[in-house]
Image (cartoon, rainbow, N blue to C red):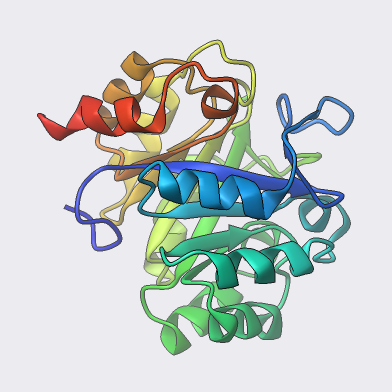
Length: 245
């Protein structure tokens, strides 16, 4: 199995914007549905059996500055399971301060694409704790909060960052993100097949079948947001669906 997870994990998302938990549709600002206080949500998922939490500072992703740092700090203090954090982490100092603060793994997106050497530098100093986020729309990696296309193939990019020392790839299929219409497993499968490091799949999960499909496709874990917040299924049911495989 992956070096990040003992077995396939379903990881609840705690995406933060303006101090609230939100879920966006295809990453577009103005489409958000709000779900209240991030610390309350984090505790809820821990109580429901989560083994890892996925935190995203959406303001950081869009603006480049970590606007929800206070909420992140509060979650770190409130929970006793690993947390991974992305959004607005642009420099080595940003990443180091978060890792030293108690974030278990940082997720580099725009910064990694713009400066791959940053991944290598941090991976050497913090082995096993640097994840690269590759978000794809229309078959191309997008950056800056999913607002800019790069023309880069996500599978090619994933292999490149594995060589740079990333401990895992977080792959988000923006085309289906937040729509509750199901996954596109073939897109994710290409990224999984391109690397030997764990791939965390994200985007479009709407049913227990989607989770089982991602598991069978070879993902090490999946991040789930809207489907959990909208009670399409419970976290316990999502975790159970893969335990017998």
